[in-house]
Each structure stands twice: as structure tokens, then as C-alpha cells.
Length: 108
Ligand SMILES: N=c1c2ncn([C@@H]3O[C@H](COP(=O)(O)OP(=O)(O)OP(=O)(O)O)[C@@H](O)[C@H]3O)c2ncn1[C@@H]1O[C@H](COP(=O)(O)O)[C@@H](O)[C@H]1O
Image 1 (tube, rainbow, N blue to C red):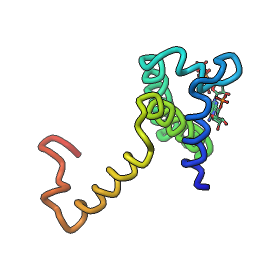
Image 2: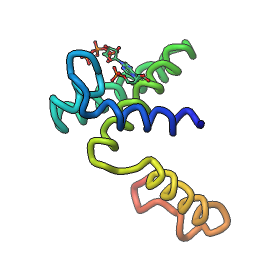
Image 3: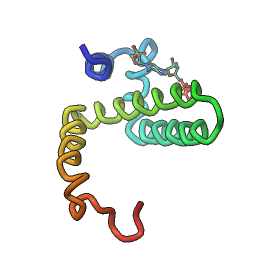
């Protein structure tokens, strides 16, 4: 099974577990605002790591970002396949179809 699919399965299983024995359950028991804040913190840590020299730290922080994003998606009952479908859709509108993929004014 693909790593992300396996992790999604584990996170779904642990959502309602005992918060004392599961970090995923602990995050869910704390609620969406805490989960969202945690994702934001991990994203900032990834940005800091990206601007520093080492590669290992960025790999670790990127894993934290992906994990906490997946915990948040699971809490909102959004399957990872929805995110993948959106990425696939964008693949279809990028590249040759310049108009459809062009960022709005002021964007990058
Ligand atoms: N990827 C992770 C993962 N990353 C970090 N952590 C835990 O997150 C906690 C906090 O780690 P941080 O690095 O964010 O440290 P922190 O910012 O100081 O901590 P807090 O402010 O969040 O308390 C630690 O207890 C880590 O063990 C994780 N816990 C679980 N997973 C995955 O989730 C699965 C289910 O885990 P459980 O829910 O614990 O069974 C596991 O099999 C893993 O695949």
C-alpha cells in the first residue's frame, strides 16, 4: 500500500482512540483550532528549514506538515483522494492551457 494511503488508514483508525495512547486521538480531542494551529506551526518550521542549509531538517519538517495536514483532513472527513483529484484536475489545466492556469493579478 502507498505510504500516504497507509497513513490515512492509520489516522482514521486512531481518530477515536484513547488520547492518552494516541497522538492522533489527542489532536482530535483538542479540536480543529488546535489541529489547524499545529499545521500552521509545522508549515512555518518547514519554511525556516527551507531557508537554512541542511536537507535533513527540511525532510523532517515536510513530513510533519504532511502528517498534520492529513490529520486535519481526516478530522474534516475529507479523503486524500479529493486532494489528489484536485491536483489531477490542475495538471489538466496547466502547461499548454496558459489562460486557465495563469495566476490572478498580483499572484505568483
Ligand atoms: N507521524 C506521526 C507523528 N509525528 C509526530 N508525532 C508525535 O507528535 C508529538 C509531538 O511532536 P512534535 O514534534 O510536534 O513536538 P512538539 O511540537 O514539541 O509537541 P506538541 O506541542 O504537539 O505537544 C510527539 O508525541 C510525537 O511522537 C507523531 N505521532 C504519530 N505519527 C503517525 O501517526 C500514526 C498514529 O499515531 P498514534 O495516534 O500516536 O497511534 C503513527 O503510526 C505515525 O505514522
